[in-house]
Image (cartoon, rainbow, N blue to C red):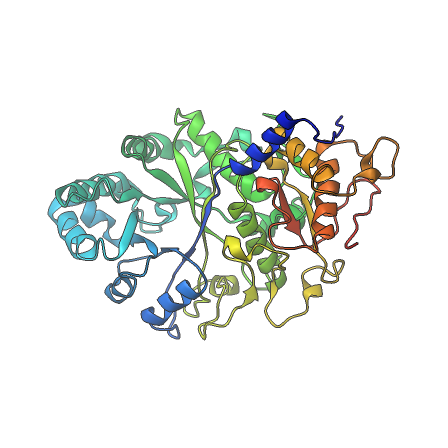
Length: 465
């Protein structure tokens, strides 16, 4: 049960301002630049596109010379990849590793800001069975980086798919497949811990939703407003499948003694087109997922299990890639068509997080939600924590001038009498009174914009004053 108070004492005002001044560290958004296509722009044009969109982090799947040269002096930080097909050579031959680092890393660094190397990609599901080569390859490449005095500047890791987990639900029960733990997971996490690196994770709520659409709410998968799911193991409430997936990986690491290894999401996305059996694929859902994810990342706060760890995420992908094999979805993850036109509109930087809507380009906004009619609302970020929410609520109802009469005891929106519901009403009132202006739905990371009408009991949220 919660109540709200109006800030009148100087000490309370000071605490409110400190909440805004020292908000949780915000995460970063990057993008994967895949090139399995025959119709893409030149690397030079791609770099111009990245810069025009304010994208300062890019991940590659190789070390193509023309791409790394184009990225030189661009101000864009780069993650490169040692492909799976080179793992055995790097693992078995130190001289090969030395030559690879010299030709593909030191030759371009530091003009090209290579900050990490992904050793392989989803090695555990590689049909060529390269798992046993992973850790030796990581160690040999690290030894090579040392020879060129680059080991303190460039991190090493390897992206794992969620299929590496034996259990992922509830998140607190997350565990790795037993046959992977001793041979490769523990040695890899040991290396990451010793070198201050991080685990690279590829997480796709789309796959889980498409396979279990009868059990998983679409709103839960898309970061839309939803009742959430409470983890029966630890009591934490999850408002998105993405957060639940990441915390399952964290729990799996903790279960084998690695509590402090950080994570970076090296791939996540949603396809804008798919086959008939790929439930949920489509432009509207892709716009919702990626747009809401960007807001989630850039407004701060981590996952329920790791609330103080910022989320650093690489969207998949920059372009639709017409030569990728597999189902239709595989060729339709891009934010851009090869002609550099947007597949749909979403914000990519903090400066764009105003009262935007994430929509399919050149399509009606009602395709994203028929209820919203172009409106947006401001709601509380439950992951911000009670202290931050209460301070922001007090500010909104006090100095902020929000109309908080409806959430007083006995008034129309008092029920449900929860901090999240009351804060959402107050934040939205403040947001609408200020014409949904830039920065009016943030409150130091305690709030974010939604494109569907909030629902807390029978209370209706206004859309303007």
